[in-house]
Length: 118
Image 1 (cartoon, rainbow, N blue to C red):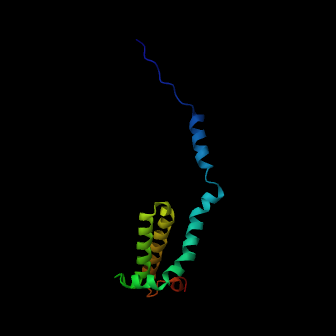
Image 2 (image 1 turned 135 degrees about the vertical axis):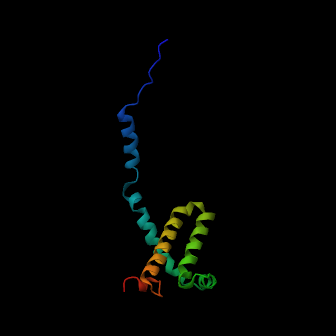
Image 3 (image 1 turned 30 degrees about the vertical axis):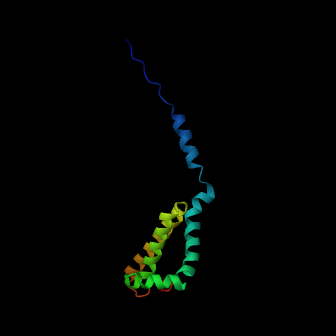
C-alpha cells in the first residue's frame, strides 16, 4: 500500500493572502489612530472643564493627577459598556497615561497642557 503525498500549496497562494491584507488599509486606515487622537484631544478639554466632571474628579484620591485618572476611568467605562467605541477609548487611555507619565517625569505640579513644553 503506497501512501499518497499531500498536495502542497503554492507560494503564490500565500502571497495573494498577504497582499490583500496589506493593501486593505489605505490612506485613511493608516491615519485613523492619528485622527482619533486628535478628536479626543479636541473634546477632552471641553469635558474636563465641565462642572459635573470636576465634581467627580475632586473625589478621586489621585492628587494632582485626578483629572487624568478620572478621564482614564471614564474612557475605560465607556469602552466597557459601548463596545463599538473600544478603539477610541483605547486611544484615550493611552493619551491619559502619557499625560500622567509626562507630569511625573517633569515633576511639575501642573500636569495640564501648559506644563508640557515650558
